[in-house]
Structure formats: structure tokens, C-alpha cells
Amino acid sequence: MRIERHPILNFDVKKKVFFTYNGKRVFGNEGDTIASALHALGVRKLSESIEKHRPRGFYCAIGNCASCNMIVNGKPNVRTCVTKLEEGMVVAEQHGKGVLYEKS
Amino acid sequence: MRKVDFVIIGGGPAGLSAAHKAAEAGLSSVVIERDDKVGGQLVKQTHMFFGSKKQYAKTRGIDIANILIGHCKAHDDLIEIMTNTTVTGLYDDYILTLLTDDVYHKIEAKAILVASGASEKFMLFENNDLPGIYGAGAVQTLMNVYGVLPGEEVVMVGSGNIGLIVSYQLLQAGVRVKMVIEAASQIGGYKVHASKIKRLGVDILTNHTVKRAIGDDTLQKVEIVEVDDQWNMIEGTEKIIECDALCISVGLSPLSTILGMLPVKMKYVGKLGGNVPVIDYHHETTMNNIFVAGDVCGVEEASSAIVEGSIAGLFIANRLGYKHPEYEKEMNDLTQQLENLRSGPFGVKTVEGLRELRGENDV
Ligand SMILES: Cc1cc2nc3c(=O)[nH]c(=O)nc-3n(C[C@H](O)[C@H](O)[C@H](O)COP(=O)(O)OP(=O)(O)OC[C@H]3O[C@@H](n4cnc5c(N)ncnc54)[C@H](O)[C@@H]3O)c2cc1C
Ligand code: FES
Image 1 (tube, chains in turn yellow, red):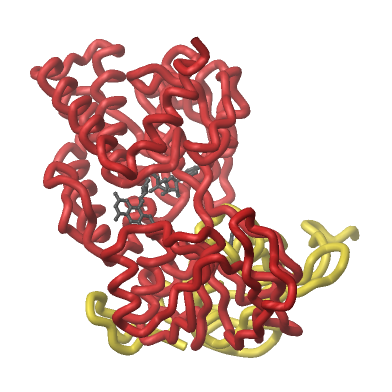
Image 2: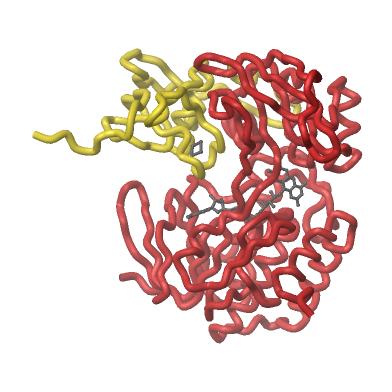
């Protein structure tokens, strides 16, 4: 859900930015962070907690708490609340601690 | 390695004001900011500020940010602003390690100002980690910076100024605020802010807290409960409220962790919001040439962050050999401004906290 009318702020219609979320092609707006784009699409669960696999969303939205970690372009533990959305990004829900480099 | 005179960690009102005052005196600085823009907490504040004219009262937070940025741009020969860069390390040989877009680099400074702000406190209750439970500042960022709504029906926890202001901003954005709950027996924030949302039909329930959150993958309901004056839950008073977002606004604590890497003396002072560095009147820590300003040394307001940053900027410039042409006049004026800001009823806590920090109560 996006704000359509606001008494003080002006949210002009922006360019669409297409990206992949859990394998689906979706889009956000230019200027979005990954987390804000997903939230606007109704996605609130971003990852699962490491031990108990409880759903996690964002909490602080300014990069302090790491509650919003996801796998972005194959890289785990990306703080999606402060990472700008880019065209063609591949974003996936993170389960577990994440693996930086697959063993070959 | 790059060597500079003055590094400022954090581009909020404190950091920007320090850079500006230092530049007026002729000292160059590098402002390091992890976000893609400077302005700190101001960039999401659509309401008009209180205080006196000198700190831009009656101006919206977002506009104050632009004024401060303008001051720095006017000195762009002396002030370098490095965005998208997080300070990851701070060492006792005055070297900072930085991360810019996954590239790790270092910078050395003669003097360092830590102006990293504060972070939101959290609350203990069952299921408090469900998606849909957000800090008040997070909701503000989501709405006012990105234009995205946090949910359709929100319950706000905490009736301090931030809780009240964010409730009003939620209403402005078209979100239904079901209620504001407050554990204390009185509303914490200014009466004007409380009246504004009451007029719009939002109840403020004092002596209430959250018992648990309910939902599968995201928040669907919260259970609230009455508390007595010692904040003990009163059994049998539980109520279930449907909502898809719970907004937590129970205070901020100084984001002072990075100072833990240095041998500076820290002290826990509840009245200043948590763990803060011990400082003198010019905001210097117990380590030579390491300074702090703004919320990181005591959670207060943007107005005081601006003045504290200015004092530190002026003083540091002088220390490094760049005396402001009107140093004495400026310093007296700024010191006076800070005193005035803290003279009202809401300043008492800070004044007492600072006394505790400096050990002035120990005699
Ligand atoms: C809802 C709300 C309403 C408010 N209303 C008012 C009001 O009416 N009047 C008023 O005077 N004040 C108000 N305030 C308070 C005011 O916004 C803050 O006190 C002020 O912003 C503090 O300034 P600062 O410069 O210390 O910190 P901040 O504004 O928090 O800036 C700190 C900056 O440092 C950056 N940073 C942190 N760590 C690092 C790192 N390691 N590396 C790089 N960068 C880093 C952060 O990204 C941030 O930009 C309000 C606050 C809120 C949340
Ligand atoms: S939500 Fe806290 S770091 Fe992203």
C-alpha cells in the first residue's frame, strides 16, 4: 500500500523498478529500498530466525538492528531496509545464517 | 592511507552543524554517513518543531535538514560529505575503518566527532518479533521517506512526543490509529500533540500495556492489559484488539557502541537514555581529540543536537589552530542557547542526567 494523497508531502509517480522476489518478477518504485518495495507489495516476512525459524520483518528501518536481513543477488545478511532497490535484483527470503561462498 | 584534520561520524543535525561551524573557522572536515543522504532523523519529520527561533522553531524537520545541508554546501571547498559509508571501526591511533559499497578503506584524523544519534528501544512481550511490529521511527521512515503505509489499522505503544507525533502522521497518511496505549498514569508528551490526535478521535489509554501479539506469519491482533501504578498487569482486564501493525515508541537510547572500541570512559545514565561517554563542557570525551555531540551523548532533541554540534565544531577548529573570528561571542551565545533549551520542564531530565554523568551529585 502506498500513500496516494498527503497534506504535506508530495509523492510523484515514479519510474518502476523490476526485480525478482522469491522467484517471482515484481516491481517497486525508483528510490525505494528493498524493504519498502516489498512492504508496498504486502510482503512483511523477510526472513526466518536462525534457531526457532520464526518469521521476521523489519524493525528499525535505519540499519541498526539487522531484523530485515535477506539474500540479495546471492549474498546473505543484506540489510534490506537501507539497501536501495536496483533493476534486476534477485531478492530471496533468508533462512538460517546464510552462506557467503558455496564450497566447490 | 588518507589523512585529514577532522572526521565527523554521522550526518544528522549534530554532525552537519559541527562541520558548518568548523568551516566558518576555516577547518576542513569529512562527514561520514551510512545512509544515502544526510539529515539524520530530520529527513522524516514532517511536523513543525518547537523551541526558539534560533533553532528553527515553527519549521518542519525536513526543511531544517535542507537548511543545515545548505549551510554545508556553502562551504563545499572545506566540507566533504561521504554518503553510503558506514564507520565500522574506530581505533586509539585515530584511524577509522569505513565500508563504502562493500569496499573497505581507512582514514586517519587529528580530531574525531562521534555524532551517530540514537536507536529505538524495544519492549518485552510474547511474540514481540512478529512482522508487523515496528519501531515508531521505522514507521515514520517508511511513510514519510518512501511513501509506503505500515498497515491499515495501527496500535501505538507509548505516548511520549514521538508516539503522539507519529500517530498524527499516520492519520495524515490515511491510516486508522485504533488507540495509543501508555503504561504510565499520565500522557508523556506535550499536551498540544495529545489534543491534536484526541480531536481526531484517537483514544489515549493510560495505565495500559501490551501483553502479547497474535498472528501466524504477520501480526493480526494484540492483547492489551491494564497495569497498576507499579506497572503490574491486572489480571482479568485483558482485551484483544485487531490491528495489522503495532508501533513501538518507548524511547531511544544513545547509539554509542562504536565508542566501545576506544578507551573512553562510559557511564550508564538512565536520564540520558543509557550508556553515554563522560564528557566535559566542550563535549570532549576522556580521550584527547575525541568528541561527541547530539543524541549519542544523551537523547534530547534536534535543537540541542544543532547547538551541541556547533559548540564542538567551534572548539575543535580552535584546538587545531583555526580560531573563528568571533570565537568568544559565538561560544557564549551557543552556551546560552543550550541553557535556554534546557530551562523548561522537559529539560530537567537532561540537566539532572548531565550532573550525574559528571559526578556533580557525588559530593
Ligand atoms: C518522531 C520524532 C519526532 C521528533 N520531534 C522533534 C522536535 O519536534 N523537535 C526537536 O528538536 N527534535 C525532535 N526529534 C529529535 C531529533 O530528531 C533528534 O534528537 C536529532 O535528530 C538528533 O540528532 P543527531 O545528529 O544527534 O542524530 P541523528 O539525527 O540520529 O543522526 C545520526 C546520523 O548518524 C548516522 N550514523 C550512525 N552510525 C553511523 C556509522 N557507524 N557510520 C556512519 N554513519 C552513522 C545515522 O545514519 C544518522 O544519519 C524528534 C525525533 C523523532 C524520532
Ligand atoms: S530493520 Fe533494522 S537493520 Fe533493517
